[in-house]
Image (cartoon, rainbow, N blue to C red):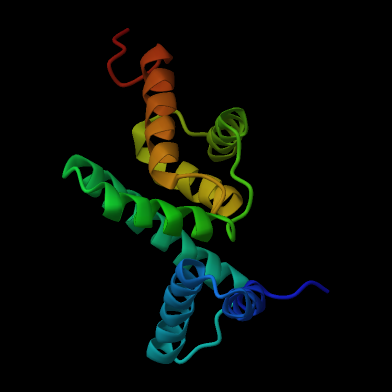
Length: 163
């Protein structure tokens, strides 16, 4: 049985301490502090899925900060955010290719029988169950919306059809 993601992070903290890798150690400690905070706040033991959700949130925060630092021409801070982003991303599963995401969306639309925008929530739920942690759900949402609106417009029996 493989070690949990949390155990892997703890072992990597120890390795970074032994290697005296200050920047890596600092980032790993940030991750561990967030995990501990969540466990204490919610009085739960985090599963690997919970850890992945926290790591995804941290990656999203780093991406937002990175774009703001670059816009403000703060390369020093942008470099730190990029380092943290790259390190955190190492613990996330391999991302799905664009083709795989589109295939999942098409399968979800078929499974939900979705032909209109009102079914977007069902489609997103189906895709999220299968792609969580491996795809940017904001991007997936845009793709689902585009697919449903194309299908909706291409459907001659839609509500705008008069016969």
